[in-house]
Image (cartoon, rainbow, N blue to C red; front, side, top):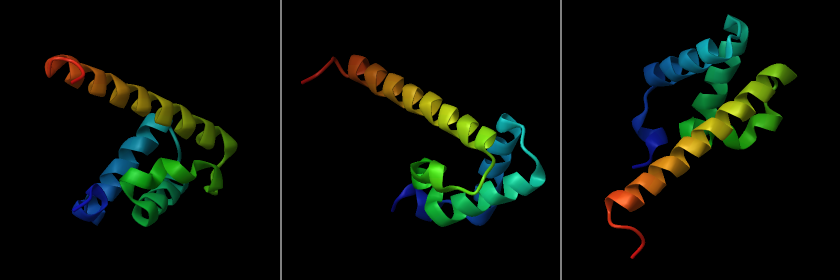
Amino acid sequence: MNKQQSINLAEYKYISSLIAQLLEVDIYTEEIITGYIENFGVDKFFNNIEMMDLPSEVIDKLENLQLILEALEEEKEINNLWDNGGVS
């Protein structure tokens, strides 16, 4: 089961609410973000940022958030390698 299937609508709304607070957007934009998360799922949400019908400053903020999340994921993977004794 992938992450998208295990997340219910309330969790989608919670995630989009967190993103909206972080990006400091209005309720209308938050609803658009919620719709995209519902349609694409959390895993694929950032794959279509450029195609979203959002103001350019929100697109820029989402792209920056994506970069931060990718950097955190890379750091997590590096830490896991170190915790497991390095590359085998």
